[in-house]
Image 1 (cartoon, helix red, strand yellow):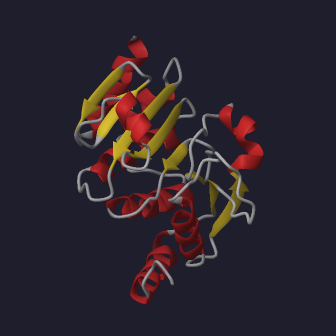
Image 2 (cartoon, rainbow, N blue to C red):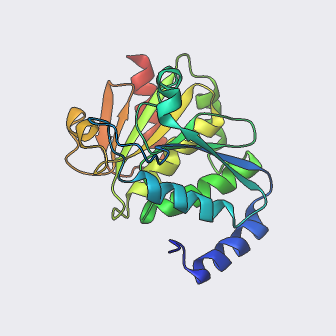
Amino acid sequence: MALLREEDVAKLREIFDERLKGDVTLVHYTQVASKLIVPGAAICPACEDTRQLLEELAATSEHISLEIHDFGAEVDELAKVGITEIPATIVNGKGFEGRVRYFGVPSGYEFASLIEDIIDAGSGVTDLAPETETALTGLSKDVHILVFVTPTCPYCPSAVRMAHKFAMVSDRVVGDMIEANEFPELSQRYNVMAVPKIVINETTSFEGAVPEAAFLEKVLEAVAK
């Protein structure tokens, strides 16, 4: 059964035809189905739905390509670049690769985040203020932004999009959306009590959707530590 309704597919085709100006690659890491049952092996309950959602999404535009990778076959190599959980999806676009990441199903309100990310990725242009872009391109050290969300949180996409736009602009920034319910151990580690919760470089954290200037201030605060 399809996850996207026919009317949703038609609307997405219309949106992408109008707004998607360049090619975008979705790189997806998942648990490839196997007939073998391995005792003690980790099970990824969200992997099947995430893969299907991305396959249906990629089919709505000739500008979107989808790469599927078996996490189990590449786990050691992926750990070196911070892909330690699945399902994981990276949005690669014009001028950037590996910095806009989703951990978990981009469903509910977060599906809109993914659509907007794809559109920005195709053009290589965001709507960030020029002074924000200047500050981000001048960062003196790497920044890793974690944004914990739930699919039913209407305020979370704003925080996710901000982190991802920062990552598109600066090669020093990596932005991760993390679905809090799918990764309870991570949520516990970072004391996630409300969403969106943003953690920057393990040293700076805050809750809630904040304006661009305030988000940038938190990034600069983390860099200064």
